[in-house]
Amino acid sequence: MLIPITPHGTRELIAITLLCGLAAWGLSLLAWPLAIVPAALLVFAVSFFRDPERKLPADPEVLVAPADGTVADIVELPRTELLGEPCVRVGIFLSVFNVHVNRCPMSGTVKALKHQPGKFLDARHPDVSKLNEAQEILLEGRFPLVVRQVAGLIARRIVCPLTVGQTLERGQRMGMIKFGSRTELIVPTRLKPEVLVKVGDTVHGTATPLVRLGAPQA
Image 1: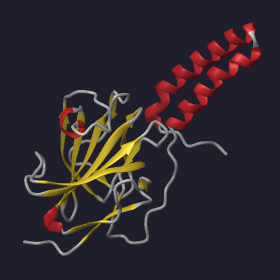
Image 2 (image 1 turned 30 degrees about the vertical axis):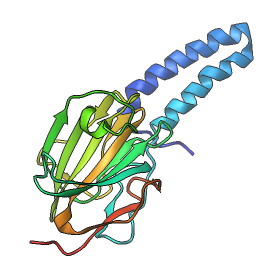
Image 3 (image 1 turned 180 degrees about the vertical axis):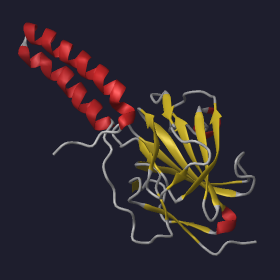
Image 4 (image 1 turned 135 degrees about the vertical axis):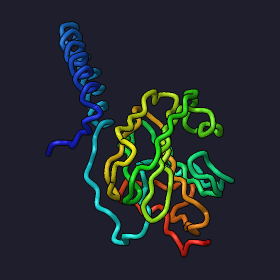
């Protein structure tokens, strides 16, 4: 069975395949077992850019996880630049072994995109959300929310092919972060969000229910 690969990794996979092929050929001339090393690197690269199909949760109202990884923190914020009101933020840490394609947590329209230049601290650093390079996506359906792609120590490229005015469906691909990173879901507290996970939980983009909303406050 073929592994589904994201088109965002095509250029890298072509380059890595050529380099690993040449390296395997050269090393095999010295001793054929050495060719295992570049072959293993190629397998890792293919695994990194995998893009599996996922089933949505049965409950159509829950917000789904925007990424694979481990829940790093759940914090309340007084406001964000794109959401000028109190919010709850769920941060997800993606290791190099996780799927790095980001998914849309709900159906809606892209209302704004904001790129934040910054550093490349390790994605587990306590100040990574404030200091690192990031891409914010304001999505609005029946209510607004923000998905935030944050670069890490190894992740040096955020891919966000979205445009303002674009309509997305829940679970739809919305870009990726290359090589270890962090993805955040930010929801207004007036929506009475009930976070369905805890710090340390493993989540899967599209498949894991992340937040259930209550009755909106005025």
